[in-house]
Length: 104
Image (cartoon, rainbow, N blue to C red):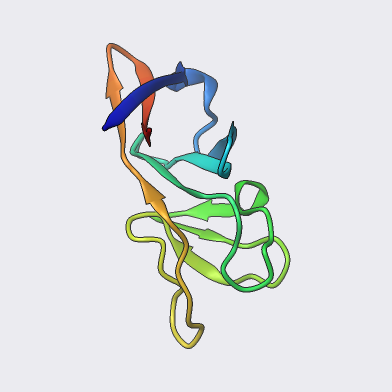
């Protein structure tokens, strides 16, 4: 069973920035791209656990602030030659508000 949780108005998440949602299973980074697409991935880099929400967002990727691993916001996979993946979560924007799908 899923549960859509209201996060924030889209305009409160900076372009090329992120917000952190704290959940019982860990933190989730909610990212906004330059063209207003919204993605959510586990806030922990698969390499050394760096806080992805503090990384640099470009295109549909984020560069980890610790070691510059490039992580896809679309599928959570590290860009080659690096190997690893972090969990992705569904998002939606309705009436200018961002929602995140969490599993019960």
